[in-house]
Image 1: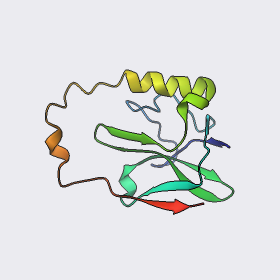
Image 2: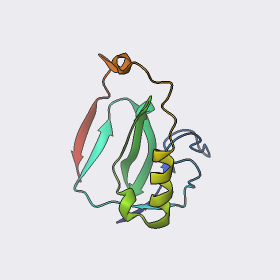
Image 3: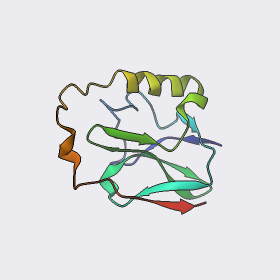
Image 4: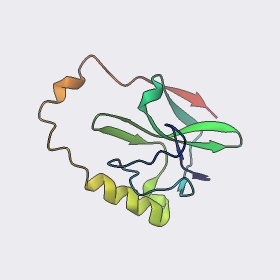
Length: 112
């Protein structure tokens, strides 16, 4: 299924400095799953999609950790831009990954 990206933050907010930098809410990405990731902390949501009235977590982030529920490699030109953004992310300031210890990103799965 194709699903339009929607900002999980305030209405109209873009995604500068993230894998979704340069995307718009009209850009569609490709999903093919029967489960959806549901972060316990709403601030970890980067983007959502709504499919048949169901809110799906499309992308999540915390610090330099980022994940997509959709398939960028199957999302055409939009997916190629997302992959290009991912490869170009600046993580040079992250020297000690132990800062994430004890503060895991908690996610549960929801069957669709």
